[in-house]
Length: 199
Image (cartoon, rainbow, N blue to C red):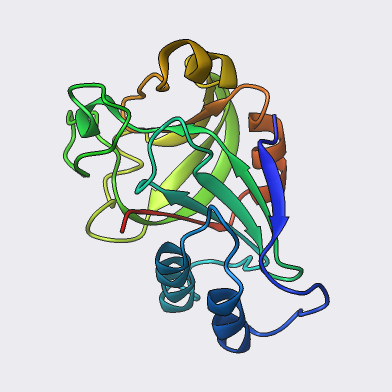
């Protein structure tokens, strides 16, 4: 399920990243913090050799609580933003408050890792359709070994938020609502960037 759509900047601004970045900062829409957006775009530039497709990016803003749509798919060509619910790892929120308290890259931590990821292949696993992620930084370079992926989960939904005020927690994966997953997998696909962080 697509939670919300909005525009970051005027359509038709199909510009190079370096020219687009100030525009994106200036016109950041409600729900996409300009700080996290700026960090994500900086990461896209730093890792440009590792990210073959730079038309769309995923941004997970873990500054927000789990009840908020905080996983954003940003179209850098027309400025459209689609936002979705996403769970964080239980090791990042041991008291289950709905707020991410810490990141970890350690195996067995069950925590969310910060940093830049490259989307890899889509496969069918224990959680159904899922997308592998390659961590590109020291803060998340165990992602493949930890099986950190994008997948759907029963504990991520607007109904869960209404009933409990928080989503359930993953073991470090980017767990989306089952209804949102097909759209996110189709739009991001392999070879694009997901950036996870908080301000």
